[in-house]
Image (cartoon, rainbow, N blue to C red):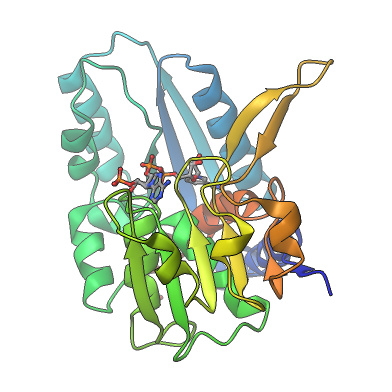
Length: 295
Ligand SMILES: NC(=O)c1ccc[n+]([C@@H]2O[C@H](COP(=O)([O-])OP(=O)(O)OC[C@H]3O[C@@H](n4cnc5c(N)ncnc54)[C@H](OP(=O)(O)O)[C@@H]3O)[C@@H](O)[C@H]2O)c1
């Protein structure tokens, strides 16, 4: 029987409905409106579309939402000063600096300048450390979205063999760290694969839950997947354009044949993608609660 599709679109919608109610309660009971600023330096078209989508979602949820667009040649010192301004702004609870930044700016320095209590992307080393020791407040958005998809699809994670393909700081490493925690929706036994892994298939074939974030189309083929596995495809690869100029996307797994072996699988698009922005919104609500002693 073909695998059940895990729809990130539907789960994200469900979480947004819950958040809408929470935002309403924060307003009426505590006079708190979650505030999110997205800082964009330059006009990279992909970045413009990402921040526009984030702002649209934030507005839709009733946030105090600010788009701060700066010129491409903004100096590092001026960007750091801008971050500091929002660190000190009590109406702003979450600060997101859209990456990548122009080459003359040290990205790490800027991300480290964000107040960890406003770091809704979960990239600051303080938050990475808290995740490691099981005290996370802000989980990085894409991995947090993956965990929510597993939980809300009723996937048993406790004691499950999880294999993660990819070790980036934004997806692979954090999802591995999330799944090893002694917590609900985790408690898994995790293997992390990368380009130096020998006999990757030996590892992927053991996986009850296979999470692939390699950035390579068909990095995982059907012979690498155990019968009945749950497959989460994080990859977003642009492999061409339609006649009307729309990008044709594919994930990192060979979807059609794997769909015949897996018990559940995420599509691309419509899988992990829609979850990421929603988890950013969830982190901003958390940041607003944290700032007001409600967490
Ligand atoms: N849906 C979303 O919201 C979302 C969010 C973030 C990323 N993504 C997508 O997810 C994919 C991964 O993103 P990323 O930022 O994590 O990528 P990345 O920084 O390029 O990292 C890719 C990782 O995969 C490993 N890798 C590459 N090819 C491999 C192979 N054939 N076998 C085993 N490991 C392999 C690399 O190993 P080494 O470390 O050894 O080089 C690296 O650790 C991309 O397609 C990206 O567009 C989607």
